[in-house]
Length: 354
Length: 286
Image (cartoon, rainbow over the protein chains, first blue to last red):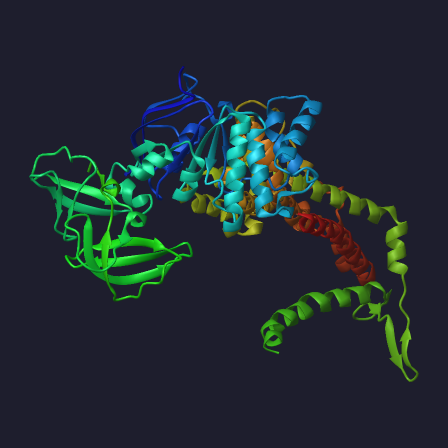
């Protein structure tokens, strides 16, 4: 079976800026894919290319195997939910949601039925005659979502759908978004710069860096096994340690002043350079005393930030490198300037490709 | 207190150049015409017993009873309405074109819209006379081409009148429309297209309704001065159809009936307040 959406070797530049560089991506039917990246990573450009607001310089975009590129936005079966919601200020909630159905020439009773059903689904029944400016931010978000879903598009594009919401609303709305996606069976492609959002909602996460796909995979795989330095630091701000493979298959890391043992042999010849990622929350404080011969570092605690569920500490290793360490929030607060001994399991050391 | 001082110049200006003239106008409108200088009897007299009312509603009664004034009035409103409509129809594509132009082009294009203001008003009207009169440029060319035997009577017609009106007032319609279109968030048009609207449908259902306040402002900015316009109808328009500006001028300078002229001006003012209030209601509802 072919994928729902196939983005094949798509490039796009704006003047001298390369927004997308031969990017390929496939989305399966009913799949929820998050495009994660910083500003300028090309994630929004990709969305606009699929919606038809931009034309690719090269490459193909297929929906159900049919080429989308020659079609103008209004002729594409995909729908988009805009970051600013783009609700029509002069139309009521009902007319906003009915807008797409009217363009399809759906009969009035059928429109009334489907709009009512859609508003019911997101708990907005009774607000049909309100104007957008009479709604709260959360209500506007739902109207925008329902407006783009009421035509039952096979693929919905979402540009930072939770970005304009209060932090308190985000998690709940995220769950609702996911439930809605399951219920409709539509493919969702969501652009976000919020890694927690991407990891929580998506079936697969595509991390974009400078117009290229840095890594694509299910959230757990992406987090546990980042492939590159960029993905490791962008997702969860991992520590990256540079080392050199030793004759016995370990890794000498001069900058941190430690020897690393990996769960599996590095697969590179002795003397080869290699980088590994180490998650802050996988590092533990060791009780004082003798330092283990491997996977341990001695250092001084420099900075400390309380996050509620955890303490984020920056420890300067005696050899120089600073390490981010996450300590349980209920532990006794360490003090800045304290000498500490850090350790971690071999399984926590993730080799990086570059 | 500081607030008051800051606003004082504006209030003084309004008092001296808006409120006071309107007050004087009202007073003269209520006066009885007389033979002196100025040619009316003040409506309020002071003598030994104090103030004494000697005004009259005579002028307003004449306005209401004599169909001559009512017709001039209605004709003026019709000319103003049509002029504003013509300006709006011409201005909309211009404003849209400027707004859709590349950013670097917008300011020069707006300057072009304003360019006629740099040439003197009378000069421009004179140019129309030169173009439209029987021995003018247009008739000359038509005759030379053998298209007409006798010159086409174009000057002193409705055609010339509306040409002059549109030419003079067009920028007043373009600017508010352009401002309204520029304020429109382009993402709304993108959303409409995304929901399946073809370009013309996007325009009809999103762009046009959201630019209506700008269109209303442009219409009023033409309609209001056009209703009292005196010079253009006098120079270009048909002589038999008297407009309120011409009638007012005649009463004031030829008949020296200041009270009647003032009553006409007050009536015109009152008639123009109505569409302004309507516009404000429309704006407040949004």
